[in-house]
Image (tube, rainbow, N blue to C red; front, side, top):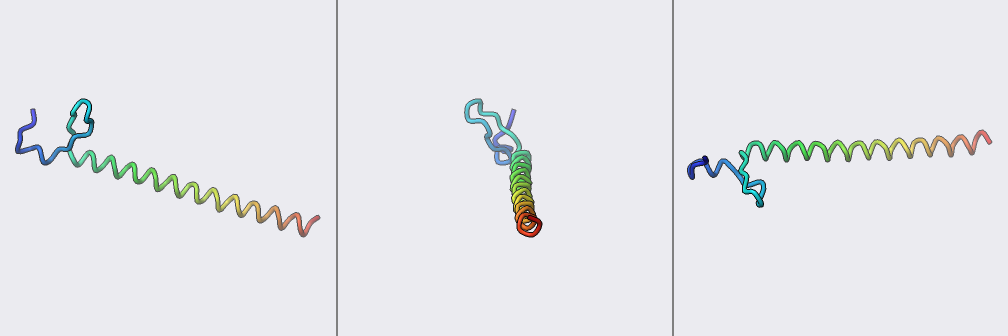
Length: 66
Protein backbone atom coordinates (compact mmCIF):
# COMPACT_ATOMS: atom_id res chain seq x y z
CA UNK A 1 0.00 0.00 0.00
CA UNK A 2 1.32 3.44 -0.91
CA UNK A 3 0.90 6.17 1.66
CA UNK A 4 0.06 9.75 0.68
CA UNK A 5 3.50 10.93 1.79
CA UNK A 6 5.16 8.57 -0.68
CA UNK A 7 2.95 9.54 -3.62
CA UNK A 8 5.23 12.27 -5.07
CA UNK A 9 7.90 9.61 -5.65
CA UNK A 10 5.54 7.69 -7.93
CA UNK A 11 3.72 8.47 -11.14
CA UNK A 12 0.81 6.65 -12.78
CA UNK A 13 1.83 4.63 -15.81
CA UNK A 14 -1.34 2.83 -16.83
CA UNK A 15 -4.54 4.91 -16.69
CA UNK A 16 -6.70 1.79 -17.18
CA UNK A 17 -5.42 -0.20 -14.23
CA UNK A 18 -3.91 2.67 -12.22
CA UNK A 19 -0.60 0.88 -11.62
CA UNK A 20 2.01 3.12 -10.05
CA UNK A 21 5.70 2.79 -10.73
CA UNK A 22 8.62 4.65 -9.16
CA UNK A 23 9.58 7.83 -11.03
CA UNK A 24 13.17 6.59 -11.23
CA UNK A 25 12.05 3.48 -13.14
CA UNK A 26 9.94 5.57 -15.52
CA UNK A 27 12.84 7.96 -16.14
CA UNK A 28 15.20 5.05 -16.73
CA UNK A 29 12.78 3.49 -19.23
CA UNK A 30 12.46 6.82 -21.06
CA UNK A 31 16.25 7.11 -21.18
CA UNK A 32 16.57 3.62 -22.65
CA UNK A 33 13.96 4.45 -25.27
CA UNK A 34 15.88 7.62 -26.20
CA UNK A 35 19.08 5.55 -26.56
CA UNK A 36 17.26 3.13 -28.86
CA UNK A 37 15.99 5.99 -31.04
CA UNK A 38 19.45 7.55 -31.21
CA UNK A 39 21.02 4.23 -32.18
CA UNK A 40 18.36 3.69 -34.85
CA UNK A 41 19.00 7.17 -36.30
CA UNK A 42 22.75 6.63 -36.28
CA UNK A 43 22.34 3.27 -37.99
CA UNK A 44 20.14 4.80 -40.68
CA UNK A 45 22.63 7.61 -41.22
CA UNK A 46 25.52 5.15 -41.57
CA UNK A 47 23.49 3.05 -44.02
CA UNK A 48 22.69 6.09 -46.17
CA UNK A 49 26.31 7.25 -46.20
CA UNK A 50 27.51 3.77 -47.16
CA UNK A 51 24.88 3.51 -49.93
CA UNK A 52 25.95 6.89 -51.34
CA UNK A 53 29.62 5.87 -51.21
CA UNK A 54 28.83 2.61 -53.02
CA UNK A 55 26.79 4.46 -55.63
CA UNK A 56 29.66 6.90 -56.14
CA UNK A 57 32.11 4.04 -56.57
CA UNK A 58 29.86 2.38 -59.15
CA UNK A 59 29.53 5.64 -61.09
CA UNK A 60 33.29 6.22 -61.04
CA UNK A 61 33.89 2.63 -62.18
CA UNK A 62 31.31 2.98 -64.98
CA UNK A 63 32.82 6.23 -66.24
CA UNK A 64 36.50 5.27 -66.15
CA UNK A 65 36.51 1.54 -66.84
CA UNK A 66 33.83 1.28 -69.46
